[in-house]
Image (cartoon, rainbow, N blue to C red):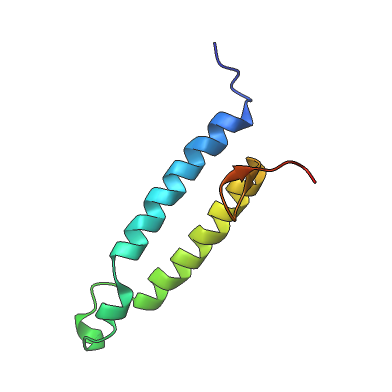
Length: 79
């Protein structure tokens, strides 16, 4: 039975969730929405950009906590 306090499983699941949310934010194409009159915006493009920044920060933190090098997704050697 898996140990419920095992951070690796939690971090792996969180990383998958954050990556999926980041893909959705990227697919929303806020730059195209900004070309429309603001009354026709289905969402505020600035909110999407702020969310994307937050998700990238969270993903970096998850990768760091999980021991991945953000430059190449290689486990850190601790040096």
